[in-house]
Amino acid sequence: MQMQTITADAPRVESEHAVIQLAPLVAVCNQSEQIFADAIQSSASSDFRAFAGRIRQLLNEYGFQLRIELQRISAGNSGVLDVDSRLLSRNSNCQSALRSLLENYRAVLSGQIPPHTRAMIRRQYEQLQRVCNELSELVRALSGLLSGYSAA
Image (tube, rainbow, N blue to C red; front, side, top):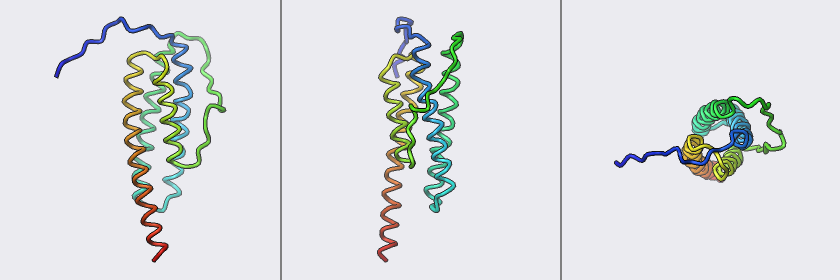
């Protein structure tokens, strides 16, 4: 495997701009985690509860990493971090929460953020994309079971 060297020639990203981009992502990640927590409490399916628990744990970890990164890149800024609640969508189910979260990740990835932050965000996005696909498959499977059960 060939090692790739990252040079210091990467464009300097203004930390205030990066904070403005990341703050809504942190908030949506936290909101999505809560949606999954609610889903765990209300679901009768043990398979779904276990899967939702994995996603919730992942979102909790990512939220923590994002908050740490936000603190790291905003060090020295005297501005107060204020997330406008209008930026948060009010999703009512887990799939739409994940889709919304993935949209926010894509928006952050399309902007200018420091290379270290970009690598972290990209890794999180890719894993969340895989989880979203798995969730869709699980929901389809559960729907098939339920429709088969109701037809019987």
